[in-house]
Image 1 (tube, rainbow, N blue to C red):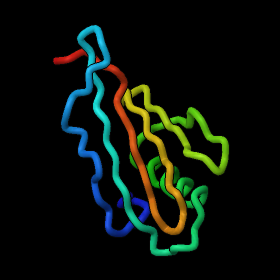
Image 2 (cartoon, rainbow, N blue to C red; image 1 turned 90 degrees about the vertical axis):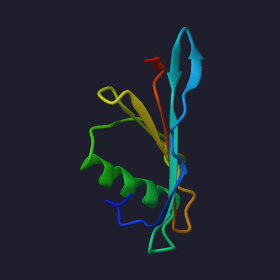
Image 3 (tube, rainbow, N blue to C red; image 1 turned 45 degrees about the horizontal axis):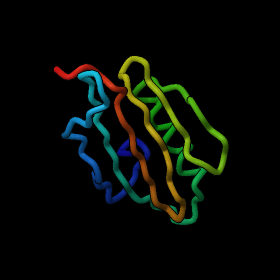
Length: 104
């Protein structure tokens, strides 16, 4: 979000706890919200801005993009999925989760 110049960024899920997914594995979730200086931007524009900013930071592939809906991204390297689901009106929303990984 910093790369997209979002304002008032808040972590809504810091991802500091393991969520069991069976067979001695767990995943972690994370989420953040922020504001865009241009309040009139719609959901697709905000998600695309985040997608562009993310591409300069880490390698993620689009796993699902239907337009006017969240964009789902995946990283095989980081074993994470990120969902860009900005509702519009200048509000960014991002959430994600790791794959189910062995507990260490």
